[in-house]
Image (cartoon, rainbow, N blue to C red):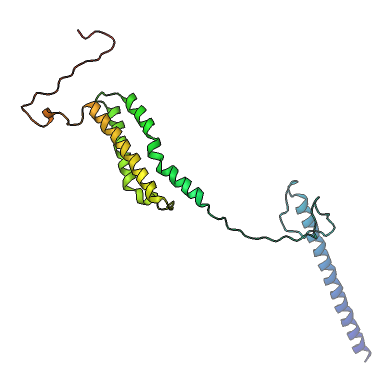
Length: 204
């Protein structure tokens, strides 16, 4: 009986020793992990930023002028379209071609009447712009139509027709339009120039 008791005691002591050893080993491993974490954190860059969200402490004071007792109500308001602004924009668009007439007259005067590349390009552009504008008049006035849209379209067309008239006058002054009888009849003598202009040296 004594030997059985001794064996039980020895087994219990051995189990206790094993448990103590395992606890000590776990503590040693935890201490080693802590040391590694401390070393890793010490090697971190000095100016490293921590972007993890942190809860705002309640003891921080509110900024100056802030009153927490005042409640704010956000209301969405829709901007009302001003009809006067639409009419003004449509009239500005309709009067655009007429406002371009003085500039086109100056450009045609500076281009000269000689048959060369630059005057031909200027006349071609002066022809193409009004024609394209009148062909796209429906889409141009689609977004800004108002109560006077018919009058505005008429003014827009008249301005483009004036620009076409300027282009035709320039073609006439350059001699590109067949307005003389000799342009249509072979037996009619061509038109003679009354004057010749030259610069620099005398022609004779």
